[in-house]
Image 1 (cartoon, rainbow, N blue to C red):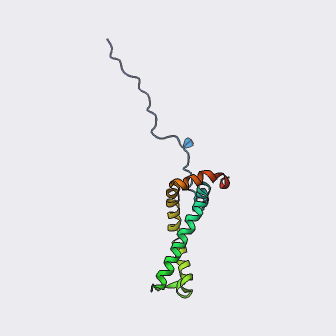
Image 2: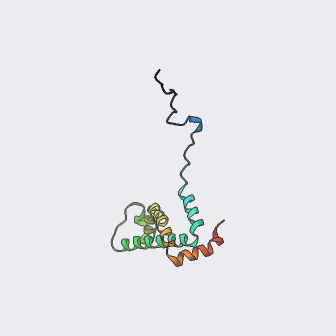
Length: 124
């Protein structure tokens, strides 16, 4: 009896042909992500943003009044002006904190109920 050999076929390539691949979606800008956060959480996101901004600017003002001497641009604008300039310098960190803290705060039951009850007022 003759030995039986398996059919030999060309194996499928491990990668897809170039015409069928999709390019990855571009990462949305920071403002686009912030607007999406506003649609999802509404006034909570705004309140967290302003609360963090207030804490940062008051913290910088207190540090300047306590003896920190700003160099460069903020040196001649006064304590509040220097605190505002410093708070704008850390804006990416402030917004990152808003993106992290807003969903965590929304998990608090009364806050979550408020968001679900009033979401129709600010969503498009």
